[in-house]
Image (cartoon, rainbow, N blue to C red; front, side, top):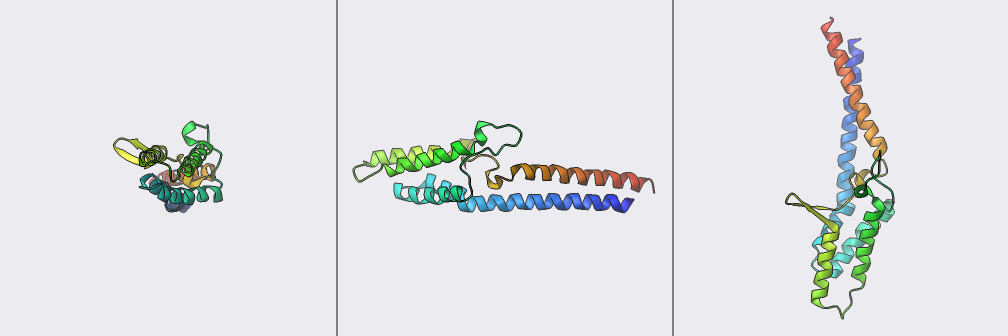
Length: 169
Protein backbone atom coordinates (compact mmCIF):
# COMPACT_ATOMS: atom_id res chain seq x y z
CA UNK A 1 0.00 0.00 0.00
CA UNK A 2 2.84 2.35 0.87
CA UNK A 3 4.42 1.77 -2.57
CA UNK A 4 1.15 2.79 -4.26
CA UNK A 5 1.09 6.17 -2.52
CA UNK A 6 4.77 6.78 -3.21
CA UNK A 7 4.14 5.89 -6.87
CA UNK A 8 1.17 8.28 -6.91
CA UNK A 9 3.36 11.06 -5.52
CA UNK A 10 6.07 10.42 -8.09
CA UNK A 11 3.56 10.45 -10.95
CA UNK A 12 2.00 13.71 -9.72
CA UNK A 13 5.38 15.39 -9.32
CA UNK A 14 6.57 14.14 -12.73
CA UNK A 15 3.45 15.48 -14.47
CA UNK A 16 3.85 18.80 -12.65
CA UNK A 17 7.51 19.05 -13.72
CA UNK A 18 6.50 18.27 -17.31
CA UNK A 19 3.87 21.03 -17.07
CA UNK A 20 6.40 23.52 -15.69
CA UNK A 21 8.93 22.62 -18.37
CA UNK A 22 6.35 22.99 -21.13
CA UNK A 23 5.33 26.43 -19.82
CA UNK A 24 8.97 27.53 -19.61
CA UNK A 25 9.80 26.38 -23.15
CA UNK A 26 6.61 27.97 -24.53
CA UNK A 27 7.45 31.28 -22.84
CA UNK A 28 10.98 31.24 -24.26
CA UNK A 29 9.71 30.43 -27.76
CA UNK A 30 7.12 33.20 -27.56
CA UNK A 31 9.73 35.72 -26.39
CA UNK A 32 12.11 34.75 -29.19
CA UNK A 33 9.52 34.73 -31.96
CA UNK A 34 7.12 37.50 -30.94
CA UNK A 35 7.58 39.25 -27.59
CA UNK A 36 11.21 40.11 -28.24
CA UNK A 37 10.32 41.61 -31.61
CA UNK A 38 7.55 43.70 -30.05
CA UNK A 39 10.10 45.01 -27.54
CA UNK A 40 12.56 45.78 -30.34
CA UNK A 41 9.82 47.59 -32.29
CA UNK A 42 9.10 49.68 -29.20
CA UNK A 43 12.81 50.47 -28.85
CA UNK A 44 13.34 51.18 -32.55
CA UNK A 45 14.89 54.53 -33.38
CA UNK A 46 13.52 54.66 -36.91
CA UNK A 47 10.16 53.91 -38.44
CA UNK A 48 11.76 51.45 -40.84
CA UNK A 49 13.30 49.42 -38.01
CA UNK A 50 9.98 49.38 -36.16
CA UNK A 51 8.18 48.14 -39.28
CA UNK A 52 10.57 45.22 -39.70
CA UNK A 53 10.17 44.13 -36.06
CA UNK A 54 6.38 44.51 -36.09
CA UNK A 55 6.16 42.50 -39.30
CA UNK A 56 8.01 39.60 -37.65
CA UNK A 57 5.75 39.71 -34.58
CA UNK A 58 2.56 40.00 -36.66
CA UNK A 59 3.65 37.11 -38.87
CA UNK A 60 4.13 34.96 -35.75
CA UNK A 61 0.69 35.97 -34.46
CA UNK A 62 -0.94 35.09 -37.76
CA UNK A 63 0.93 31.79 -38.14
CA UNK A 64 -0.05 30.75 -34.61
CA UNK A 65 -3.66 31.97 -34.81
CA UNK A 66 -3.18 34.65 -32.17
CA UNK A 67 -5.76 36.98 -33.72
CA UNK A 68 -8.88 36.42 -31.61
CA UNK A 69 -10.13 34.78 -28.44
CA UNK A 70 -9.29 35.07 -24.77
CA UNK A 71 -6.50 33.51 -22.77
CA UNK A 72 -8.73 33.31 -19.70
CA UNK A 73 -10.43 30.06 -18.75
CA UNK A 74 -13.32 30.75 -16.37
CA UNK A 75 -14.36 34.26 -17.37
CA UNK A 76 -13.16 36.75 -19.95
CA UNK A 77 -11.48 39.95 -18.86
CA UNK A 78 -10.39 42.81 -21.16
CA UNK A 79 -6.69 42.33 -20.40
CA UNK A 80 -6.86 38.78 -21.81
CA UNK A 81 -8.54 39.75 -25.11
CA UNK A 82 -6.28 38.51 -27.89
CA UNK A 83 -8.37 40.20 -30.60
CA UNK A 84 -7.91 43.66 -29.10
CA UNK A 85 -4.20 43.06 -28.59
CA UNK A 86 -3.67 41.82 -32.16
CA UNK A 87 -5.79 44.56 -33.76
CA UNK A 88 -4.06 47.23 -31.70
CA UNK A 89 -0.65 46.07 -32.92
CA UNK A 90 -1.96 45.78 -36.49
CA UNK A 91 -3.27 49.37 -36.25
CA UNK A 92 0.07 50.58 -34.95
CA UNK A 93 1.75 48.93 -37.94
CA UNK A 94 -0.71 50.69 -40.29
CA UNK A 95 0.20 54.03 -38.68
CA UNK A 96 3.84 53.40 -39.55
CA UNK A 97 2.85 52.89 -43.20
CA UNK A 98 1.52 56.47 -43.31
CA UNK A 99 5.03 57.84 -42.83
CA UNK A 100 6.54 59.07 -46.08
CA UNK A 101 9.34 61.35 -47.22
CA UNK A 102 7.23 64.43 -46.38
CA UNK A 103 6.81 63.38 -42.76
CA UNK A 104 8.83 65.66 -40.48
CA UNK A 105 11.27 64.34 -37.89
CA UNK A 106 8.97 65.59 -35.11
CA UNK A 107 6.05 63.63 -36.56
CA UNK A 108 8.23 60.52 -36.90
CA UNK A 109 9.32 60.86 -33.28
CA UNK A 110 5.71 61.26 -32.14
CA UNK A 111 4.68 58.15 -34.07
CA UNK A 112 7.51 56.15 -32.51
CA UNK A 113 6.59 57.43 -29.04
CA UNK A 114 2.96 56.41 -29.61
CA UNK A 115 4.14 52.99 -30.80
CA UNK A 116 6.23 52.60 -27.65
CA UNK A 117 3.22 53.47 -25.48
CA UNK A 118 1.11 50.94 -27.38
CA UNK A 119 3.59 48.09 -27.08
CA UNK A 120 4.91 48.55 -23.55
CA UNK A 121 3.41 48.66 -20.06
CA UNK A 122 5.08 50.51 -17.21
CA UNK A 123 4.31 49.53 -13.65
CA UNK A 124 6.25 49.52 -10.40
CA UNK A 125 9.27 51.04 -12.12
CA UNK A 126 9.60 48.19 -14.62
CA UNK A 127 8.69 48.01 -18.28
CA UNK A 128 7.16 44.95 -19.95
CA UNK A 129 5.73 44.12 -23.35
CA UNK A 130 1.95 44.41 -23.46
CA UNK A 131 0.43 40.99 -24.09
CA UNK A 132 -2.47 38.96 -22.69
CA UNK A 133 -1.43 36.80 -19.75
CA UNK A 134 -0.89 33.21 -20.87
CA UNK A 135 -0.44 34.09 -24.55
CA UNK A 136 2.64 31.87 -24.85
CA UNK A 137 0.56 28.69 -24.35
CA UNK A 138 -2.64 29.79 -26.08
CA UNK A 139 -4.88 27.89 -27.06
CA UNK A 140 -3.82 25.20 -24.57
CA UNK A 141 -4.49 27.34 -21.47
CA UNK A 142 -7.42 25.24 -20.22
CA UNK A 143 -5.74 21.85 -20.50
CA UNK A 144 -2.54 23.20 -18.93
CA UNK A 145 -4.33 24.65 -15.91
CA UNK A 146 -6.25 21.39 -15.48
CA UNK A 147 -3.02 19.40 -15.77
CA UNK A 148 -1.31 21.58 -13.16
CA UNK A 149 -4.09 21.26 -10.61
CA UNK A 150 -4.60 17.54 -11.26
CA UNK A 151 -0.88 16.76 -10.94
CA UNK A 152 -0.57 18.72 -7.70
CA UNK A 153 -3.71 17.06 -6.33
CA UNK A 154 -2.38 13.59 -7.16
CA UNK A 155 1.03 14.40 -5.67
CA UNK A 156 -0.48 15.76 -2.44
CA UNK A 157 -2.87 12.81 -2.05
CA UNK A 158 0.03 10.46 -2.66
CA UNK A 159 2.22 12.20 -0.09
CA UNK A 160 -0.53 12.33 2.55
CA UNK A 161 -1.38 8.69 1.90
CA UNK A 162 2.27 7.66 2.14
CA UNK A 163 2.69 9.50 5.46
CA UNK A 164 -0.46 7.92 6.90
CA UNK A 165 0.51 4.42 5.74
CA UNK A 166 4.12 4.97 6.84
CA UNK A 167 3.00 5.92 10.36
CA UNK A 168 0.85 2.76 10.60
CA UNK A 169 3.82 0.46 9.94
